[in-house]
Length: 236
Image (tube, rainbow, N blue to C red):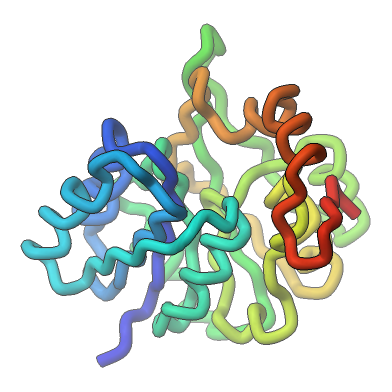
């Protein structure tokens, strides 16, 4: 039986914290899932840490690749996935135990592959008061405008696998990795906002969202463009 959800964790040099993210998937009350960990070229002991879970649970996979940055790892995970719906979990965040169950309850009843569905999440850390992410409900114009001014990551979104037949992550983009993809698909597909809070997004010194504005990363990418065209895209 194919999994209902494919969960993709892209990771790089996060052996010390990735167990929390993986365990949050293992703890799900909805059991029909697969977890694909894409190691984007780590040189630490990520393979050993994830391997412990792979040996214990046949639903968990580990794949190592030469470094292609975050969007390259996401695309690899999509290519390897076999689930009806695809979800993304960063290696420093967690799903609450009800996350998949809440999504499945809605998706199984409505069953529209064109529709993008999301829940809400708690945002904690970096001296920030614990908050809940803003709802994106409303008309299409209101929703896209709300997202434009308050970008959210992929943590609580669920996408039918068919959406990725025409929409891939831009591997030449080095900043705002989620932003371009989400703006494009939110303009093209129906969207449903569920109001249950089912995930925790942790802000810390190593958060990817903070590294978007890391000057050293920017300078390194400009000096050493890695994509096949020899040019680097910041965003579109």
